[in-house]
Amino acid sequence: MSSSVEEDDNNASSQLQATLQDSITQASSTRRPLLTHLNADTTWLLSIPYPRNANKRKGRIYFHLLIDPWLRGGQSDVAKFFSQQWHAIESSVQSIAGVEQLIKGVEDAARVPAISGGDRANDEKEEGRGDASQSWIDAVAVSHEFTDHMHKDTLLEIPSSVPVFASTKAASAIKSWRHFEFVSEIPRFARDWRTASTKPLPEWLSISRVAYAGADMLYYHSAVMFSFPSGQGDEAEAVIYTPHGISPADMDPVTKADPKIKTLALLHGLQDIKLGAQLNMGAHNGLKVQRMLDAKYWIGTHDEVKKGGGIVSWFLNRKMITLNEAMERERALMAKEDVEKENLAKVRFEEVANGERLVLE
Image (cartoon, rainbow, N blue to C red; front, side):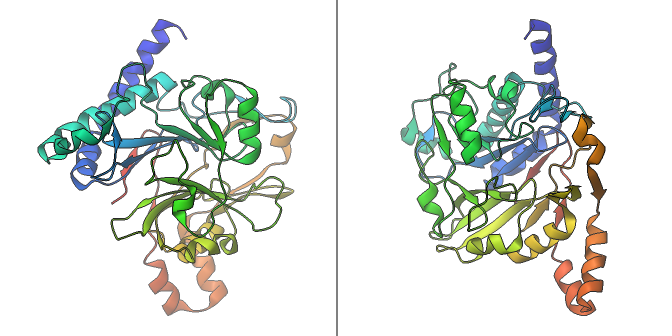
């Protein structure tokens, strides 16, 4: 990358950082996770505060997870004549260097409230990984092998020392690049969230995959679950990321988890997309999943209408469904007006735009 591009990206990151300062201060004072949307589609930065008594990387307040990074350039699956897409809206951060700068700004802004709150008393528990050569990104999660989730050019910008957790086929592909020192397949969720906390993750954080119980060749309709302590004994909070949607029945293991898991945020899109078969499951399905999990936040994802070409673009059937439309359909289908109104009043949908950040309170 040329120095002028790097300079522009650092300036853009600095401007973005300035607009997000209030949310960092709020999150730091309450020790709550931050969720930052890095593009208009489905690239996210999830920043989870270290528990007060946990070992931490030197000088860090948050553990930063980069999810499905695709920042610029095109993506193609199979072949360009078959399917090729580009972002219609320029990503708020254009490079991994820009992401690093953004995270550094988060940590710098969070450090002052943390020090005044007494966190420096835990310095003796900090791990010695704070030198300038280390990435500010703590881990990367890749949900699918499709290149709008597993974007090679973006991923290869990430320092090789950053651990990568990916779905089965994505992990195999990423290993074949021989770039990253550590690539691991995301384990299937198995009742206890703590069992998916594998090194080099800290013991208080787990990444697991929720999917159809049988053999699903692509695991297309599945979810990645990020679980961490709720502060209530062994119980956990979770951020559940399902960019294409998932059948409510397949989420049943989460509702039966032991220890209990409370869904803090569900990331599920509104668009209903078909290509003969169902691709993105849309708002009607999202509403069912939100109700089943009783998620505190439902956040839209993977809804960017990208610039596209190739054969696939001729046959893609896309329908944008609003939350209100989904609610009206549920009322009509179930014919339980009073019950539906009570349930739907609990839905808290958040549209976190490109470059915006949400404190998950």
